[in-house]
Image (cartoon, rainbow, N blue to C red):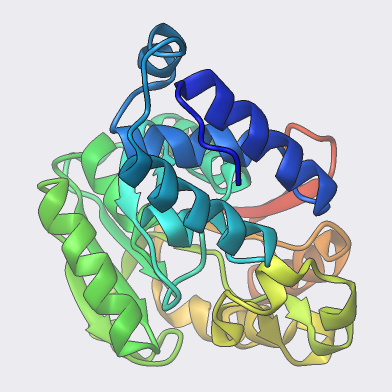
Length: 285
């Protein structure tokens, strides 16, 4: 490989290489920022700076790994969510922007429907902790509990909570089992919702590198929603709020489950920014 002298040359070569390998060229910029410890604007300002051979070799090794399918977030070890930086690794699902919309809608619903200073909020299947930690950071007076069936995921979430100074009660266990000790004002969940039959259609970066227990569920991805909907009536305060992230084709089915569990609730499907069904909410009065 021809020796490169400048930052812009490294970026140009990596971008072209990733495009040739069917990856998004923008990943090259993220990996270069990571290697050089620069913000986006810092990288732009440094384009004519020299890049050392050692820096380039480390950067290029990551570029090659990404070309093989390894997610950028696993190479940098982090992802931004709701303006905060979260540690991620192969034990947890990589945060998606759509989940930010779940948070945004929930905060608006809380403001309109719940008038308590100290809310009890539960996040079921917390993964890296993004939902629980963000809710705690946005509502510092809330009592926030987060559950997961995976001990390694909870350990990652606990690290994120410590880094972001969020006091969360983390509990190991399946779905609502760890939170049956009380009633809750808000329950949120972004559970596994991809049907096993959909695995071949997923990108290799997702299918081969993200934890399957955080991706796939039985009954065409609907099994966990059904279980939670059945369990929620004993666990939710009145007034209370339930918020699910869903697969874009699952809205009507999940809406029906929550309507069945809470016949008097206001249940609705909300689209994400891409106009796809992405959330289902129930407002229990």
